[in-house]
Structures are given as structure tokens and as C-alpha cells.
Image 1 (spheres, rainbow, N blue to C red):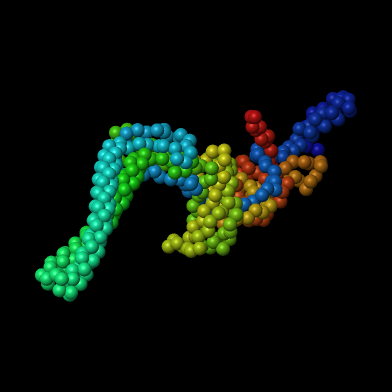
Image 2: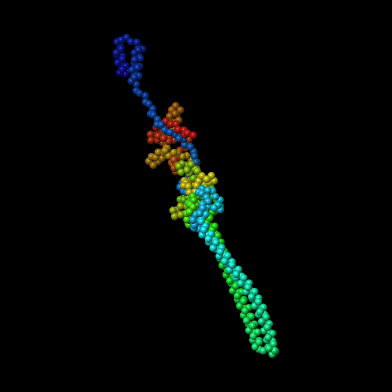
Length: 422
């Protein structure tokens, strides 16, 4: 009996009290001195996330600039001052569309001078031809005279031989015959000389005609036209500017297909193959904005021991631009597995751990949860998640908040995840 019970009994023994009343007093005294009942420790408020199976990618990422597969920088074929611009930046053009006109005064003057030279060469050639015809006519006359003198010489020689004519007359007809022969030969030489003159004039005419063609080409080159269909880039000149043949006036770009140069380390080069998928990612998140494929692999390694590859990307909707800075991800292979948020991982003594929510031996009478610390083996980090190699299975619930307040076996109280607004 407790000390209080003994005191009550002693105090009321001399009085006549009801036994029931005394019993009640004793029960009250005993219950007031009983030890307190132990309370369960409070749980730590945490947020849980269910581990789900997903597709894990073995990838390599790098930055690069897209380039149009068909792009032409327009430079003038001749120097000159810009006289007119026919298009504006961003205009769609077809092949042969005029882009820009240079002032053509010099070219027009050169064409006029060359045409004048051609006309002069034609006149000289025609004159030489006329001379040939005149000399050839003279040759016919000289030939007839030679024949006449030959007949006269024979007749006089016969008469002189018969004694009908004196010998002096034979000498005279001989001189006439020799003079006729000399005149014929001189005319023949004149014909040869005239023919040579015609050939020379023809050569000069051809040269003059070539100069005309060249001058006309120079005149045509003062107009710059689009060599391919596409979109006009920035027009870097204005009317009145003097441009040289080394100046880029603008460019014509076809954005339907773009390519990206990618440098692959030598240890990955043996995995390169044509058709390997390459993803372009949003600069701010993991959203894939376009998917292309490897279209070129260099046969050699550069001085940095890397292999140059090129990936091609279709761009029919025009979402991508020539020169655009992008994040590129080469997808080497795809595997099924699980990934977990970076914030769910604790690193202790060089090992990685997560807290998994477990119930008290699956007791239905006590369904409370506690945190179970599990060792996990992690792979690459992709964005804000780790790829899990081993230690977790799909369906397990891991703790993703309140980790600093947890130890192995500590009770936890799951908190509702906030719903995202549509």
C-alpha cells in the first residue's frame, strides 16, 4: 500500500466510515502515484516520390553552331559603286533573281570602244580583201600579157632565124617577154602579201570581237544575281558604297537542311556510325527541339585526337536558323532503367545513399512509415537526375525532401505533393 493509502487508513480508523468509501479513496490514491505512459516519438515531415522505370540514354553533349548545307556568300565580280539594290534582308529569291546593280559607266564605255575597234577591224579586213581581188584581176591580165609576149617572141625568133627580120628586133621582143614575166611574178607576190594582210586583219577582228565579248561580260558582271534559290541574309551595303571583289555583299541561305559539326573523342570514335541519332536540346531545359542523324564521319583524327563528325537536321518548318547556337546530344544507346532526382541522394564516406519509405514490418495494426537508408550505385547525371545502376527498383518510394533531419529508422510523415496548375 502506498504512503498516501496508509495515511488515509490511519486517519479514518477511528471514525465509522463506509467500507465502500474507504475503497474508493484507496483506488484514487494508488492511481495518482502510477508511472506515466511512454509516448511515441513524432515523425519527420518529408515528401516522397515513386521510382518509375524510364528510358536511360548513353549520350555525349556539346555546344555548336548550326550551318546551312547550302549557303552562298555573294561577292561582286568587278569593282564599282552600288547603283541599286533590288532586294531586302529576309527576301525569298529564286536562282537568277537580280540582287544588286553596280554603276556600269566604265563597262559601257569599254563596250563602246570595243565595238568601234571591231568595226574598224572589219573595214580594214574588207579593204584587204578588195585589194586581193584587184591584184588577182591584175594577175589574170598579166598572165594574158605573158602568153601574148611568149607567142610574139616565138614568131619573131622564127622570122629572125629565116633572115626575114634583123636580130635586134628579136632582142626587143625578148625584153618585152621578160618584162611581162616579171610583172606577172610581181602581181603574184602582191597577192600573197594581200592575203597575209587579210589574215592579219581577221586576227585583229577576232581580237576586237573577243574584247567586245569581254566588255559585255564585264557589263553583265555589274549586276549581281542569286546563284541559288533561298533566303537573302543581311545586306551589308547600301546605295553609293564602293565595293571590291573581296567584299561580301550578302548571302543566300537555304535553311531546309542544316548541319552541325561535332568533335568526338578518340575513345568514343569506334562507336560512331552513319545514322546515329543526334538530338538538339533547348538551352534552358531538356526539351528536344529537333532530332537528326550523323551524316559524315572524318576518316582521320585531328591534332586534338578527336574525330570530326557532322549531323544533318531537317528543317522544313523553319524553326532552326543558320548560325544558331545549340546544345547537341549524341545518343549512343538506349536502356531501360530508373533515375532519381539529385536532391534525393546523400553522400557518406564516398558512398551514395537514399532514404526509402518502409512500413513497420508491413504491420496492419501499425501502418506508420520510417526511413530506411539504402546504398545505391549511380551512373551519369543527366539534367537534374542520376541514372541508377543498382540499389533501387521501380515502385519503391524515396524521400526527396527533409533529408537533413533523417537518420536510418526515423519515422516519417509523407506530405502531399503540390499539384501543378494546367
